[in-house]
Image (tube, rainbow, N blue to C red; front, side, top):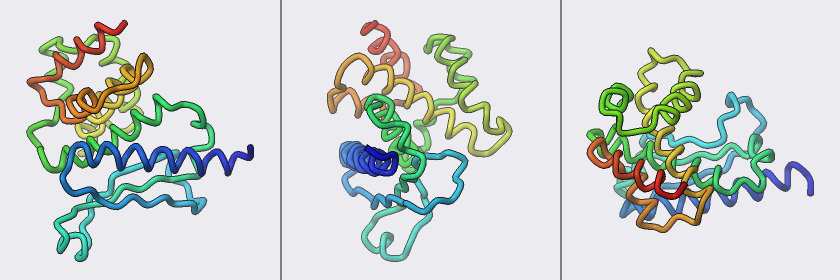
Length: 185
Protein backbone atom coordinates (compact mmCIF):
# COMPACT_ATOMS: atom_id res chain seq x y z
CA UNK A 1 0.00 0.00 0.00
CA UNK A 2 1.30 3.45 -0.93
CA UNK A 3 2.10 6.05 1.70
CA UNK A 4 -0.68 8.34 0.42
CA UNK A 5 -3.23 5.51 0.68
CA UNK A 6 -2.10 4.80 4.24
CA UNK A 7 -2.33 8.49 5.11
CA UNK A 8 -5.88 8.65 3.74
CA UNK A 9 -6.97 5.61 5.78
CA UNK A 10 -5.37 7.02 8.92
CA UNK A 11 -7.04 10.41 8.34
CA UNK A 12 -10.42 8.71 8.00
CA UNK A 13 -9.84 6.65 11.17
CA UNK A 14 -8.74 9.75 13.10
CA UNK A 15 -11.77 11.72 11.85
CA UNK A 16 -14.06 8.88 12.98
CA UNK A 17 -12.49 8.84 16.46
CA UNK A 18 -12.63 12.62 16.83
CA UNK A 19 -16.28 12.55 15.77
CA UNK A 20 -17.01 9.69 18.21
CA UNK A 21 -15.31 11.42 21.17
CA UNK A 22 -16.80 14.81 20.31
CA UNK A 23 -20.30 13.27 20.33
CA UNK A 24 -19.49 11.56 23.63
CA UNK A 25 -18.57 14.85 25.32
CA UNK A 26 -20.83 17.39 23.59
CA UNK A 27 -24.48 17.52 22.59
CA UNK A 28 -23.62 19.35 19.36
CA UNK A 29 -20.65 18.18 17.36
CA UNK A 30 -18.59 20.43 15.12
CA UNK A 31 -17.27 19.84 11.59
CA UNK A 32 -14.11 17.92 10.78
CA UNK A 33 -12.07 18.83 7.71
CA UNK A 34 -9.37 16.60 6.28
CA UNK A 35 -6.78 18.73 4.49
CA UNK A 36 -4.70 17.13 1.76
CA UNK A 37 -2.69 20.18 0.70
CA UNK A 38 1.02 19.76 1.16
CA UNK A 39 1.89 22.76 3.29
CA UNK A 40 4.14 22.61 6.29
CA UNK A 41 2.26 22.49 9.57
CA UNK A 42 5.33 21.69 11.64
CA UNK A 43 4.24 18.03 11.59
CA UNK A 44 0.93 18.77 13.27
CA UNK A 45 -1.47 15.94 12.44
CA UNK A 46 -4.68 17.45 13.82
CA UNK A 47 -5.98 20.52 15.61
CA UNK A 48 -9.09 22.09 17.01
CA UNK A 49 -9.61 25.55 15.55
CA UNK A 50 -11.90 27.62 17.76
CA UNK A 51 -12.57 30.44 15.31
CA UNK A 52 -16.25 31.05 14.88
CA UNK A 53 -18.11 31.31 11.59
CA UNK A 54 -21.50 32.94 11.27
CA UNK A 55 -23.29 29.76 10.12
CA UNK A 56 -21.86 27.76 13.04
CA UNK A 57 -22.89 30.46 15.53
CA UNK A 58 -26.44 30.35 14.13
CA UNK A 59 -26.43 26.58 14.66
CA UNK A 60 -24.97 26.97 18.13
CA UNK A 61 -21.66 25.41 17.08
CA UNK A 62 -18.20 26.73 17.74
CA UNK A 63 -15.00 25.75 16.01
CA UNK A 64 -13.83 23.00 13.72
CA UNK A 65 -11.40 20.10 13.82
CA UNK A 66 -8.77 19.89 11.09
CA UNK A 67 -6.76 16.83 10.16
CA UNK A 68 -3.58 17.19 8.13
CA UNK A 69 -3.44 14.04 6.03
CA UNK A 70 0.12 14.59 4.75
CA UNK A 71 1.70 13.76 8.10
CA UNK A 72 -0.33 10.66 8.87
CA UNK A 73 1.20 7.91 6.72
CA UNK A 74 3.75 6.99 9.40
CA UNK A 75 0.94 6.45 11.94
CA UNK A 76 -0.65 3.58 9.99
CA UNK A 77 -1.34 0.72 12.40
CA UNK A 78 -0.77 2.81 15.54
CA UNK A 79 -4.36 2.74 16.77
CA UNK A 80 -3.69 3.56 20.44
CA UNK A 81 -1.70 6.63 19.45
CA UNK A 82 -4.41 7.80 17.03
CA UNK A 83 -7.08 7.35 19.69
CA UNK A 84 -4.98 9.48 22.05
CA UNK A 85 -4.60 12.21 19.39
CA UNK A 86 -8.39 12.29 18.97
CA UNK A 87 -8.81 12.65 22.75
CA UNK A 88 -6.19 15.44 22.79
CA UNK A 89 -8.11 17.47 20.18
CA UNK A 90 -11.51 16.97 21.82
CA UNK A 91 -9.91 18.04 25.11
CA UNK A 92 -8.96 21.36 23.46
CA UNK A 93 -12.63 22.00 22.66
CA UNK A 94 -13.58 21.01 26.22
CA UNK A 95 -10.99 23.49 27.58
CA UNK A 96 -12.80 26.36 25.84
CA UNK A 97 -16.17 25.41 27.24
CA UNK A 98 -15.10 24.48 30.76
CA UNK A 99 -12.08 26.61 31.56
CA UNK A 100 -12.04 25.45 35.20
CA UNK A 101 -11.14 21.95 34.01
CA UNK A 102 -7.63 23.02 32.96
CA UNK A 103 -5.06 20.90 34.81
CA UNK A 104 -2.03 23.06 35.43
CA UNK A 105 1.50 21.79 35.64
CA UNK A 106 2.28 23.44 39.00
CA UNK A 107 -0.83 21.83 40.53
CA UNK A 108 0.37 18.36 39.51
CA UNK A 109 3.90 19.05 40.68
CA UNK A 110 2.71 20.23 44.10
CA UNK A 111 -0.06 17.65 44.62
CA UNK A 112 1.97 14.67 43.40
CA UNK A 113 -1.25 13.18 41.97
CA UNK A 114 0.50 12.09 38.77
CA UNK A 115 3.61 9.95 38.50
CA UNK A 116 6.79 11.98 38.15
CA UNK A 117 7.76 9.98 35.02
CA UNK A 118 4.52 11.03 33.33
CA UNK A 119 5.09 14.68 34.24
CA UNK A 120 8.64 14.66 32.90
CA UNK A 121 7.52 13.01 29.65
CA UNK A 122 4.79 15.61 29.11
CA UNK A 123 7.08 18.49 30.07
CA UNK A 124 9.62 17.33 27.48
CA UNK A 125 6.92 16.79 24.85
CA UNK A 126 5.22 20.14 25.38
CA UNK A 127 8.43 21.90 26.37
CA UNK A 128 9.58 21.60 22.77
CA UNK A 129 7.18 24.48 22.30
CA UNK A 130 7.85 27.69 24.16
CA UNK A 131 6.94 27.37 27.86
CA UNK A 132 6.29 31.09 28.07
CA UNK A 133 3.68 30.84 25.33
CA UNK A 134 0.06 31.59 26.19
CA UNK A 135 -0.79 28.20 24.70
CA UNK A 136 1.55 26.18 26.94
CA UNK A 137 -0.99 25.51 29.76
CA UNK A 138 -3.55 24.31 27.22
CA UNK A 139 -1.05 22.06 25.44
CA UNK A 140 0.24 20.70 28.75
CA UNK A 141 -3.31 19.86 29.83
CA UNK A 142 -4.22 18.23 26.50
CA UNK A 143 -0.90 16.31 26.42
CA UNK A 144 -1.66 14.92 29.89
CA UNK A 145 -5.08 13.72 28.69
CA UNK A 146 -3.44 12.29 25.56
CA UNK A 147 -0.92 10.38 27.68
CA UNK A 148 -3.68 8.98 29.91
CA UNK A 149 -5.72 7.81 26.91
CA UNK A 150 -2.66 6.35 25.17
CA UNK A 151 -1.67 4.42 28.32
CA UNK A 152 -5.19 3.04 28.59
CA UNK A 153 -5.65 2.28 24.87
CA UNK A 154 -2.28 0.50 24.76
CA UNK A 155 -3.54 -2.02 27.32
CA UNK A 156 -7.19 -2.46 26.35
CA UNK A 157 -10.04 -1.00 24.36
CA UNK A 158 -11.25 1.92 26.46
CA UNK A 159 -14.95 2.04 27.27
CA UNK A 160 -17.01 5.13 26.50
CA UNK A 161 -17.26 5.84 30.22
CA UNK A 162 -13.49 5.67 30.67
CA UNK A 163 -12.89 7.95 27.69
CA UNK A 164 -15.49 10.43 28.87
CA UNK A 165 -14.01 10.56 32.38
CA UNK A 166 -10.49 11.11 31.01
CA UNK A 167 -11.38 13.71 28.36
CA UNK A 168 -13.49 15.67 30.87
CA UNK A 169 -11.01 15.22 33.73
CA UNK A 170 -10.62 18.11 36.17
CA UNK A 171 -7.99 18.91 38.78
CA UNK A 172 -10.26 17.20 41.34
CA UNK A 173 -10.47 13.93 39.36
CA UNK A 174 -6.96 13.67 37.91
CA UNK A 175 -5.72 11.48 40.80
CA UNK A 176 -8.56 9.01 40.20
CA UNK A 177 -7.65 8.81 36.49
CA UNK A 178 -3.98 8.23 37.33
CA UNK A 179 -4.94 5.36 39.69
CA UNK A 180 -7.18 3.81 37.01
CA UNK A 181 -4.31 3.71 34.56
CA UNK A 182 -1.73 2.60 37.15
CA UNK A 183 -3.95 -0.33 38.17
CA UNK A 184 -3.83 -1.67 34.59
CA UNK A 185 -0.07 -2.15 34.67
